Length: 317
Image (tube, rainbow, N blue to C red):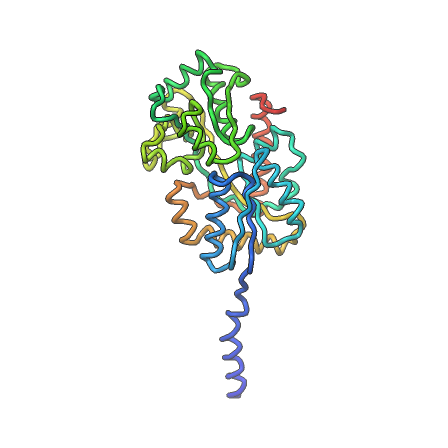
């Protein structure tokens, strides 16, 4: 009897250690150049996976082009069946795939989780003559081609926002002088170097530049003003445009339902960790965690809605 109890005690003592398996190496594809939203999310998630003890090491791979389509194609071709790989994608990707009639699509990857969202902000150089959004819109309406607006990939959420602004100004979006950048680093360099009239990106990507006074924020694409963000909404300045950018992660094609569920568990644990939460607070990210079938349904609706917008704004090739 005593031996039996001793055996059970030993078994209970070792069981927790057996149950905790750590992935040796994990891969995250950020389908854009370093410095932008996809890259930031990929690296933040990688750090959170490590900090939460689930992964020993993480490799973040950057592959820019076609609004994320090139990175997605590489992920689909190289990671088939790999349960330890994720692709970062989001609203930008939905718009770009639709606009460019891409040969790859979300049906080729496995939806895991929507992670976060953020509102866009439009900024100008500090030396710009545009002191507020009304100044910019008046100049654009008078001479559209003379006002260059930079942002993410063609057809992405930044491009859609600029096109909606054009529509609100009563100007055909075809006249929009939109300059797409493959990564946030390039876009920031362009606005800081006065190479473009204005630049659109997620607020979190530009918050440091705004707070440091290196660029002037004209408006944020929220429905109501946020007490934590010292920028007026576009709506309150007479340009009724409300959009937000979400980002999520996708597993490789060909993984099993059990492997999908394990990835969901890993991602949700990482997103609830102090490591992720600290970065999310700094970047002013909205918590939009949604996983599995629920995320898959959201993605289907988002794709339909974006297709209608792209067609309406004549953004497709």
